[in-house]
Length: 337
Image (cartoon, rainbow, N blue to C red; front, side, top):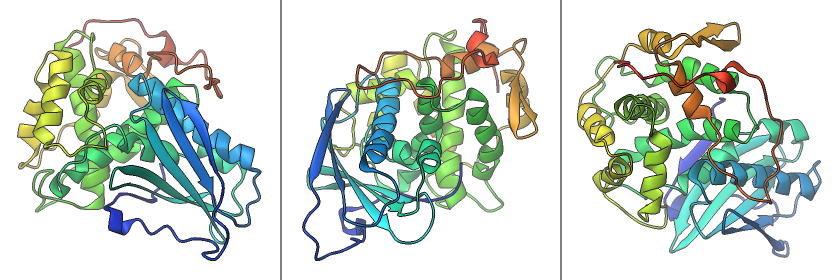
């Protein structure tokens, strides 16, 4: 995963520059996915790609979110695509709530190609933000951590990303979320690494712990669906503990609240090499291989498993059949920590 400007901002910070401020407003077209109306506005500007390719990119991202959460997390969202004359690919993304209107703004290079959009993670990352309530700024790590962790998994569940790529990104990225000298807990250290990758590390630890404690019956995906099912989306302001409690209620184990109590004020450094060994994740060149005999091999398989049908508007893209993660058998889970 490459670095980009992906902010969950206040309304005042949403200042996506218009390619031509004096131009006639762009037409708004709507697509229906996962029970939601996604209203798309592509501003005037020079784009190499035809509009249908841009709509397909947005659709794929919405389908990944619908698959992971069992439905799109909000009823209506506005997506504003702004052509930018410089750069390559997707340049930035911001998701905000303006009064009661949810807006995803993205900057797209005029030179963007089909390959750029097929490889893009920004749109899916921004849509994940819609599926969690707005919390205080000190908890921004949970918003960005969930988006960093869920985005590649959701894309893999619809066949848009190989499982090996998901886990290679985690192997490479999660060390960036470990506390440095002088750091505090997640609520007290707001560096880029601790916010994005420290939050993602919280998510992986929670996912493994929930699956261990429920004998792989439930995972973080169930907890996040439970939060959403309780009304916890970006349309609402919640205390973080309310959201975590709703997630724990959905899985029947207090994993989220207990992990938050451990990590909120104390810099926790888990043994990542030991965790990869337990999960059966073996780095190999620019990829990974899956050890099906590892104690927690079934956790990897369960995390990646397709859970639902996102609907007729979603056609599977780029499936990767026959990977090791697809064929792992369910094993009883042992403690990873």
